[in-house]
Image 1 (tube, rainbow, N blue to C red):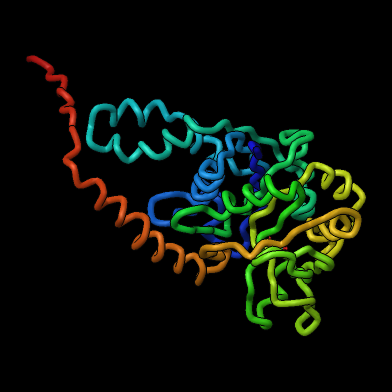
Image 2 (image 1 turned 120 degrees about the horizontal axis):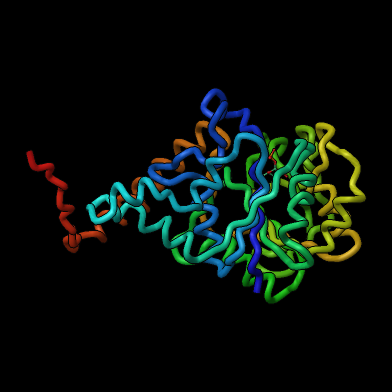
Amino acid sequence: MIKKCLFPAAGYGTRFLPATKSMPKEMMPVVNKPLIEYGVDEAIHAGMTDMCIVTGRGKHSIMDHFDTNYELEHQINGTSKEALLEDIRGVMDSASFTYIRQREMKGLGHAILTGKALVGDNPFAVVLADDLCVNEHKGVLAQMAELYNQFRCTIVAVQEVPETETHKYGVISGEMIKDNIFRVDDMVEKPEPGTAPSNMAIIGRYIMTPDIFDLIEQTEPGKGGEIQITDALLKQAKTGCVLAYKFEGKRFDCGSAEGYIEATNYCYENLYQKAKKKESKPAVVKVKTAEVEMA
Ligand code: G1P
């Protein structure tokens, strides 16, 4: 069973400036929940309990979000507003949160290597929180964790994208070994237009075996002068086995304005509104007695 889930969350979120000037992009709300909480929910749903978060400067609000806010708790204790904290309390009770700071931004590979101190010698999942994934019955990480239990090797989630989009992603090619499962034989980070090995793009969900850390250490800076996880994964594919999994569900690129709005509309209609309808039974509201100062 995979227990650890790594969240690289040190990036600047430049695509969403100025919103992300002082607020981490992982804390951008989709309806009433920050992006990273959707990722954490997905990991918990997949049976993971240790959330390992790679942060950086200016990311304190992520830590605060997964911690108790005594003043707020005190203020709303016993009021109907308390129900709004139910989900996040459940999340905090279901998982532990540990943090490490990435001092320099040297790419996704480097961010994942920074998480080694938290992950140790264990297989682990990786969630890029700006990719929001939803699937009604079984989340994407849960699907991947099941596959891991079967194959015991690194798995990347992939999605078919139009050819005009391949330059935005890591792109794989491979032989199909089962429905929706490919054994990776090539992988290119953000290929130049017209040079992609296929139209199967890696999205922000991975399961990795811990030997990836040595491979990252041996990886030279690649695309954009950064240490790319795609390059380390290609080495793993050549020397061992990496699978690509065409997942069931939807994925929204919340790093782009269009994807963010689509995710917001989808979550509002399919998650938020439905949850509200379920709350049809009248809530028991404890009336807070006011302290009346007697003259
Ligand atoms: C990263 C990875 C890329 C992957 C993408 C998925 O790129 O480097 O291989 O396809 O995430 O969202 P980024 O979007 O951080 O530039």
